Amino acid sequence: MSVRRLVKLFSSFRNVPVEIKEVRGQIVDWGYYDKIVLSPFDKPVGHLRGIMIEYTSKLCYGGEVTLCVVRYNQNMSVEWQRLTCVKELIHSMDQPSHKLNTRKKLESLLRQLSLNGQINDSMSMPALLEEAATYQALGVLAPLDTLEDYKSAGLSPEEVAVKLCIPLNYARMAMDDSWPDTLERIMNLLD
Image (cartoon, rainbow, N blue to C red):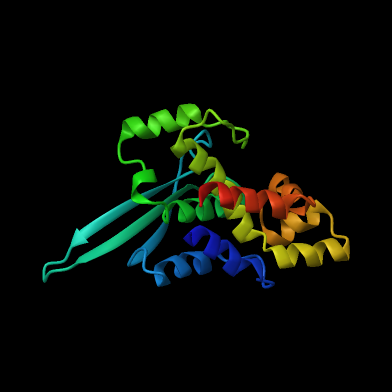
């Protein structure tokens, strides 16, 4: 699974915070898209923090160009923008059968989300993928080796949140001793 490969690649990063353009560049390098664009939108922060849209364009001389646009709500904090962008970049690698392609499917997904980040057995596959992608994004933005360094240095979750530029609640989760096992379970769930 490429998400596992992405998390593993960034797990040894010590030059933090992980830059979104590095994550985007890796996905393009792996050939998922010819280009990925990050584009903010301006709406009140509600259920929709971000969305990923794919396009395929025919070239006038033959061939195709694939484009992915990651839209994120610019009214969120920078920490939430970063987590949202990486989550949507992870969705860009979803299998075609797991991607939503109609407004009806999107509306159904929004009704099913837990809104508190909890994964439960009654979730549909799209809802499960949505919640899991947030944790996978945390796995990219909070490299395991760096987290170990921070634990050894006795850094607080607040300090880690600032250094990694991630939301505080997710820094607390990443600093918990159970985080590596939780991340592994989520990765195995979707393999």
